[in-house]
Image 1 (tube, rainbow, N blue to C red):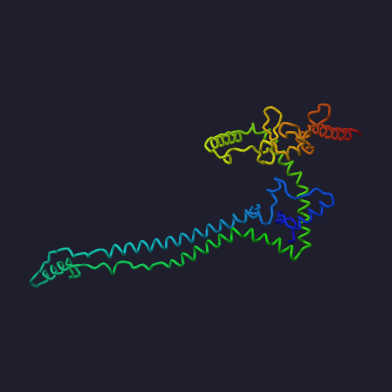
Image 2 (cartoon, one colour):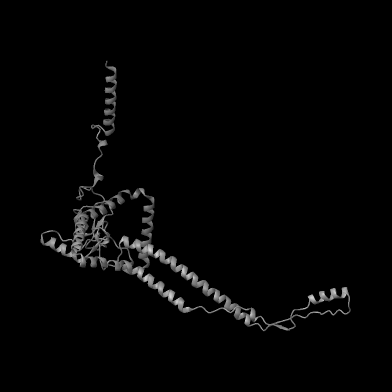
Length: 343
């Protein structure tokens, strides 16, 4: 609330009222927004996310992925251990029993020291039990079945957390409505700031995009990866156009500046042979019906483009900056030498 720029990219009712008031006084209407402005500004009910909201969701999503992975690993190993012990117990109880193998019993009669030693050795080879069948059931594990309700509860909590994470940026947008209700003066100040910002950026955004397209067209021949990317895109679109019969999957011609889809009636191509420029009606009118790719910026009304300013070093009659600096430095040194030589 204390900052006029913080998250001030949403179109509120206050901005609509300000725009209508300016329109009554003779100003051009600000709304609806232009195509290039819709990428930066949006309504409070828009599903698109701002850069700040996207970064916030990415950070929270990374934390949630880590937490959910840990919970999944714990539940997985818990059930895997139960399944392993249950399988061992099941197959162990299926055994009919182990019979004691046959053995030869030695009976030593007589007395004396040697007889006692031999009798002890013979007893060492006798089995400890006299049973003919061994029961292994007491040695088998008896695992407790896990509580599946806890698994379901963990799953529900994780899904609820993900739902909160995805809905958080949209819920936080209600702060603008709360501020407008409790602090209408501050909300009006922020709305006026947004109005002036959009008005100032309306021409600057269009000029920036137009200059960027012009630079890409002039320098793309020197960039090999750009040519390769364009070649791959052309092949990809050709394959889609041949394989798909529906027109929505075919490549559509778009405006060079704003990227709007063009039709035969709204298509304004450049008359220069070999030029790839094609524009919509709005961009073509703003550029004074001149192509921004093959014409000079002065021809289509961009007087602030410094790319067409001549360098002063091209004029051989004028003294360059280096020559001026050298002349001043040498002149000072000569004056110093003359002052030292004079008595």
